[in-house]
Length: 196
Length: 358
Image (cartoon, rainbow over all chains, first blue to last red):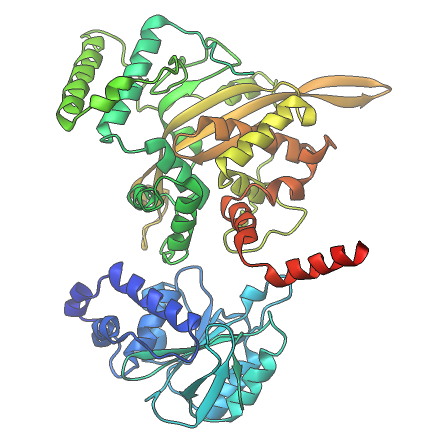
């Protein structure tokens, strides 16, 4: 992490701005929310990794958070930032995938926790990095926060079936965030119905 | 029934009222008691942010607590402090209703307990300049009290021996068993019944001041311990430390500041059966602690803690679900407020049912 970056990133205001961006994304599923400005100030810390994804990890992971990610620069960044090491995927509140890969994401969605009827909020949040949210098959999304329906481009296909199965019994389920290289985020909470 | 008949030494009371006035002027007239209440009910000790929440909410405590709780949920947890022992409190105020002469003496501190509750219409004319003048005059008067050769107002470093420790030394109060149990965290895990004492104390400490006070009052009026006695009430600053990353022990800890708290230990006489119809009278302890100055809430909390921990059936207040699920400000005000939301469909359905019965 460069000293220069440390002086430009505002630990309070940039984190708050990013948190509000994530909140907007999850309030309006399918909407692309721009995090590029605070993400650009995290970029010098994470090398080639997706800066918006790294920013979100920095905002969401802290000392009391359980998370999982494959070994790599982003996992090291999150460990250093949050001060806590990754754990097993079955216990993780956040599962972080630096690069989108259809079958790997499907596998992760099958393993992460989905909450219990007494504690549905314990369902995991999966954070996925990808290249461009303007590329990929068009999906139609419906549900709370969407006026009738909205169309979003999301790659792959295998993960969609697994995700739809895991969110079939609301309030149980998991929430997804996708971050692209342009610093944009799209949320897919468990309340959103997505056509396969 | 409204009590204002609190008695004490005239000079001590005068100094206490001066201190209360000084606190108000030093804060520039900010609503300090309200900020304390909001911080306690939001479970976040952040005076500046709580003041902003109070201003944004136009002084509505429920709205300010909601704002501060929402902010709290976005703040990262970076460190965990060492367990803070209230015996280390830098005492600003300390009284006992159980003993007149307690080791270290009673210290009235800044309080409105001894005021006449008459509105000071002079405040309407108060200006920044007049506030500064009054503050200087009070400071001068207080400094006159500290004459050369006079005994210091607080012994040593501001720490006082605890009244309950004195009772324990005399064998009149049982010592609690040592416990290595890690306290639960009600802000991270949903409450499950039966609760642990640590969870009950957290819920009560962040309970709505009015709700905790009302239930504490009910416990006095026959739904709990009949007449407990405040063994000791303290207001003061509690120092907090975090372990140093490469430290060898507590002596290497980093001091990160202090929080103002109100702590109350209440003594409740209870009858213990000793067999063959014999009973012995013992004291049970009720504990209350909350952020800032909020003495009524801390006393009420100690009463509810004792009732809930006693295991005795003393009516609705012994039912922990009844008490703990209804004292939370955000939950209670949120559920009540949801009645303002459109219920058009459910109401039409009820209307239809009513029509059918006619």
